[in-house]
Length: 427
Ligand code: ADP
Image (cartoon, rainbow, N blue to C red; front, top):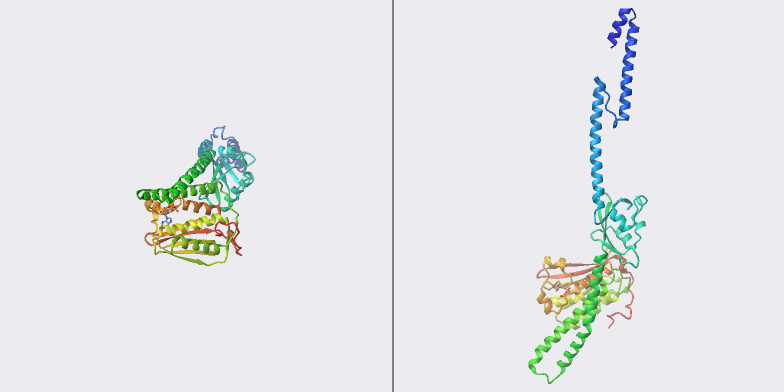
């Protein structure tokens, strides 16, 4: 273009005017192209790309390609997002996404329904300020999401929801929310049924056991009736023990609330348990006691007695005569620990996870012969749960077992207090 301008300028004798005119025309052309390009960029969704050649044409086609690619990805993400929203909305369970500060980032429709969350106003709010249940605050604070948490968010109503935290990323988490009102209701019915049935069975059984006892004292009873009568008494005693344990378990299951209790002098309790055991055992086992800490335990004296004596009774029941049993109490920065170690038959590893299930027995025949109800360890587990503690079982088949109870440091009492008068172990 400049060359043409220069040639024309040369011909008419004004070279520079010719060049200047050519530059002006070129500048105007570029300006028009730029203007068209700008206009198209601003309205590119509605207009066709400008029909420019050369470098402008190249630029326009590059930008068009980029634009098409962006549109394609945008549509895809939009489609995905809509699908995700539709699928999470149709989920039967609620999901809430929380950031590390436990603020609501997102929730689906079901979570909104169950927790009464509003889409516009509740985003960014702390979940704890919206779900005002103390156990829920503790659940989030503790950070142990291996199990869920059931709560009744509305006082006095059967409505029950279960939370399950699912941590991910760097401190973020999904909170799954389920309506478990029906399951909770069925569970309550089952517990009530067991408690009522046990209660109803207790009176007739007491009468039968009473008559059997009277009959056994009758000196005129024919000799051949004595063995069956003895067996009937033994079975009646077993049934009485099962019913007593079922009732205790029902009482324990009635609530999940933590026991506050009283200070318990563990050293004195162990001495008492040992003395009782030695009397009952009539010297068949060596029962040792190692109290390594003067600290006491804050708890329900009756329940703690029941748990510890269940473990000691098991050790005596399952350890053959001549074996040794050791009771041990010690404390450290992790809390208070009570352990019963025996030199009995031990338990093989596959049974250990199921040991605290109701009526679970490693060797049903032997356990029945030993007079067990199959509920002892379930009771121990519940008692410990109510005290924030855990039960641990270590066992080597053929060598013996150690059942240990672990209580958190908060449960320790640094100055042991005398036993309250009304404890069951004050005899
Ligand atoms: P049970 O009343 O039958 O003793 P538990 O719940 O107390 O019921 O114990 C469950 C099962 O665990 C027992 O049947 C027994 O097989 C096993 N068990 C418990 N303690 C011991 C132990 N110290 N040594 C060996 N086995 C044990």
